Length: 209
Image (cartoon, rainbow, N blue to C red; front, side):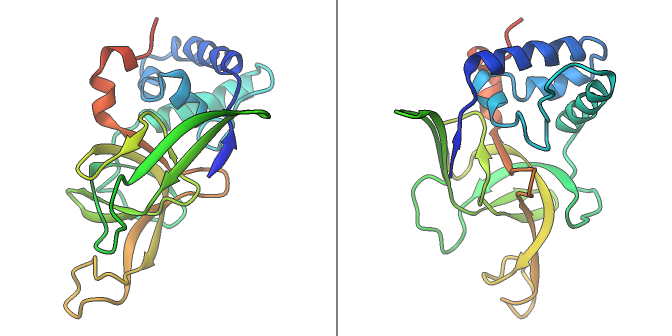
């Protein structure tokens, strides 16, 4: 998937705006910190996860505060799984049994004659956490903070709750394949977001004051 990459000046402006809003409530900073680099922040600006306001207003500030709280919330593995509802999971990536091999995901920014473009090439994978395996559907998704995703990487995934046919027998049902398996995917205005957790431990990938 290819999408226009926002100008760095616009991302910088949005980042400063978000920091000003986060100063009013320390808990909001956690959501901003998870997307603290210019590249990862660009992946969520203008989406349902974090609408970019054309101008400052009290109503728009309330929306941004709510979105930052959602992005900073703890994972929801044990929460009720309601189709279409935003969810946040944390776990380890695993390859699907019929995977084509190689990296699970590659993300890059390329410069062409018509400007900068963000390019995501991902394949479906499993996310394993305490609640069991969840099928991550890569279509229209974005890898926010790393050039590639590999099996075994520890990640946070933001997306919409759903179900998918269990054609690979992932649910462990007694009769093998059949039925449905829990899935997390993109929505119309909420792209799937995958963030590699190990990156947040690196000093040069943290938000700069």
